Amino acid sequence: MQKTMPWISTAARLALAAVWLVAGGLKVGDLAASARAVNAYDLMSYDTAKVVGAVQPFLEIALGLLLLIGLATRLTAGISAVLLVVFIAGIISAWARGLQIDCGCFSSGGELAAGKNAAYWLDILRDIGFLALAGILLWKPRTRFSVDGLLMGEER
Amino acid sequence: MSKGKRDRTAQARAVVAKQQAAERRRKVTLWTSVGVVMVLFLAGLVGYTVMSRQDDGKVTTPTAAVDDGTAFAIGTGSVVVDVYEDFMCPACGNFEQASGESLQNMAEANKITLRIHPVAILDKYSNGTEYSTRAAGAAAAAAEEDKFLELHNVLYDNRPEENSDGLSNEKIIELAKSVGLTSETFVNAVNEGTYKTWATDVTEKFSDRGYNSTPTILVDGTKLIGPNDTVPTSELLTQTIEKAAG
Image 1 (cartoon, rainbow over the protein chains, first blue to last red):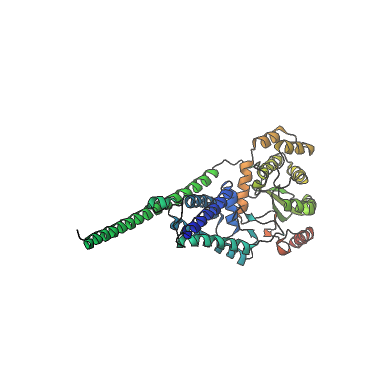
Image 2 (spheres, helix red, strand yellow):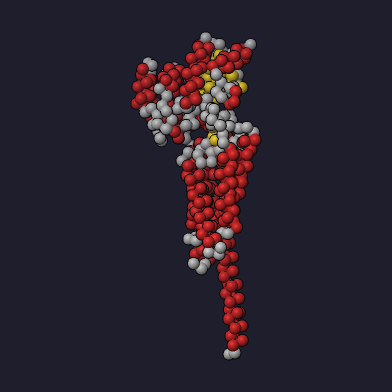
């Protein structure tokens, strides 16, 4: 266990990094669409949604890069977990209100074509999976090939 | 030095080394955390700045546009029917096929005022050519020549599939020509994208009004939705309009 745990954490760290990089990367090219995706949740005014929609992809990419290099892993994992909980709450609220929207998780989502049904439980399940990755890192933040390890002068 | 004393010295060293390592970890954790917070703050700031810059474009609103510059009106009937649509959206194409003609007939008979709002929410589905924005811009240019409906209809008759390049500017101009829209002003407006910022502006107002999908249809200001969140059928639309007309 002593030996394998850092490897499990390393895998979790890289996987979570990939999640953020892909999620942010898919949105960053079209911030207007990202704003519309946020607006579709109908939780805030469009002006606020615009700011959230513009800031979010950059935050996601930054988090992805920080996890990729492994800097302050426990903190970045914690922030990831908070974000994921917010996203899950948003999806549940959209579901509860019977909104028919694309969660905008890995796209600039927003509107769903008529007749297409939102599969909210799938989105939630997936986010819970990501949350588990963050959980592993919160619990055991020591990983291989990380800047943290280098700075701490840790045993290889 | 006795053996016991040596052991104690080694133990003391080990304790000091352990404390130093702990101190180092504490410092590293503190400073990396500060660094991470700053990086995230900067990333957010970049997003905010990019967004603010995008808002700065100058908007040329076509003079023919009504309803806060977002729509082109046909007819002068008392019942107002608003249609928000994207020129690439398949559901809008189906809606136009089912109800477009009857709506336009009612508008021309001045039974209704038909206000068509061209929005561009599907730019990401035209391989980077931003067909939705270009098409909406071209429609605005056509409106300036009093040929909005003509271009609107011919663009829907030739609606490109999602994830294609959309219609090129040349193709749009060619189609316009086929419906009698030949002016040089129009051709230049399409080629130069004169009304593209306007199309973005209309799309923003569409979102600001709380709409997310196309086609969005309103009869006298009330959103009309078919059963199970479907696009209203032609029958439902006609019934609703007749009810509104009283």
